[in-house]
Length: 186
Image 1 (cartoon, helix red, strand yellow):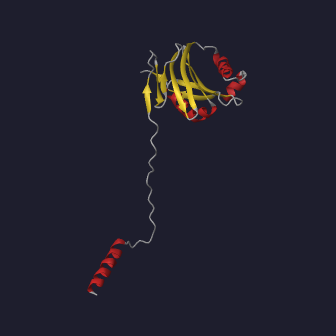
Image 2 (cartoon, one colour; image 1 turned 30 degrees about the horizontal axis):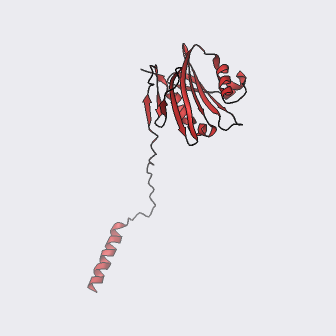
Image 3 (spheres, rainbow, N blue to C red; image 1 turned 30 degrees about the vertical axis):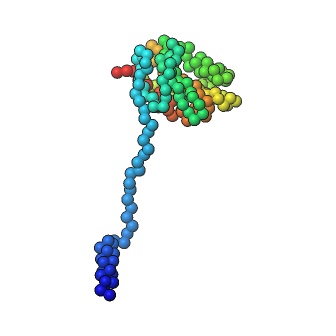
């Protein structure tokens, strides 16, 4: 019996000292840990470029042709895209001529300047204002281009990603972030 009383005293002590007199519910807010962004890297081309950028880690710089400042393979779940940066003096034909050339590359008919202006998205990078154009051939699901035109003082810089439609959907934000990061080497 003495042993049972000791157990009862211990249990009652634990209950008495572990409970609070407050009869309200406490709510705690704990900051959720966000998943880390995919690692990016600040790089410049292996060529003698005056530009720098931040590219996603999974993009692979590859050998391009002589007109390119840099070329990247852009992986997606549905295949590889081809990203290039080129630079030409002056206006290099203007917006309409370049967008029409890209439309032709994916089997689309040329668009009027009015239509091109409607699909244009204005953004700002470290280089300043630039325009983004998203072109998709809905009849051929393997043909899409997202491209940017940067009108600089004496040159025009072009960034173009040729990829399939499904790949464009998954790579679009990376492309925009990449373009936003382009600047002159300090």
